Amino acid sequence: MSTVVASTYTTQYLDEVKTIAGLIDPVTIDRMIGLLRDLRQSDGRLFILGVGGSAGNAGHAVNDFRKICGIEAYAPTDNVAELTARVNDDGWESTFINWLKGSRLRSDDAILVFSVGGGNLEKNISGNIVHAVRYAKEVGCTVLGIVGRDGGYTAEQADACIVVPTLSADTVTPHAESWQAVVWHLIVSHPEMKAHEMKWESTTS
Image (cartoon, rainbow, N blue to C red):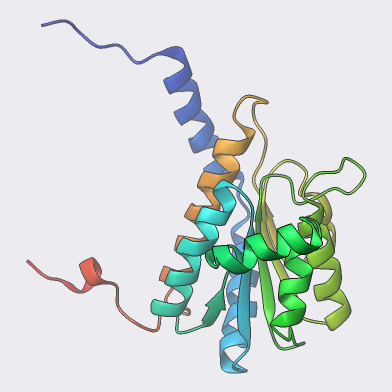
């Protein structure tokens, strides 16, 4: 039977995961937890924004914040009919801001941005996220983010934001999107956030 040897890429990727784990700021995560705890206590709502793989993460996170934490949460990308209607009729860049306006975003709500770059109008990247964050700041609601690269507009404006370090130009997106999941799962399972026991954690064998 032949011996399987891990490829250089596989070893490097996993080494990067370990390095990032040591660089993520736990104080910022705890700040996010405190803001989300306050949000729940004031009956605020959480709107999670993401594009591409981050949109998939947003839908998953909505489930966890609602089911585990008891926070009213929504993601605009979960309603494909409304999303595509807004894109078709109004354009992509205004999609999130118009959806937030339709949701009557209030000062006691929060938005949580999942993004690889955090949005940058000058580079014409994720303008819909930039407009949404700008509107959220105008309304006075809490802005949170888990983003990659330099964090973009989200990191500049957020009340608390985790910026996933870039260790290699070849792995920016997979690490940013993977660490979105790591951080939000940490948050929803934190004793200060968890309102309902998770299935497997509550099952004894």
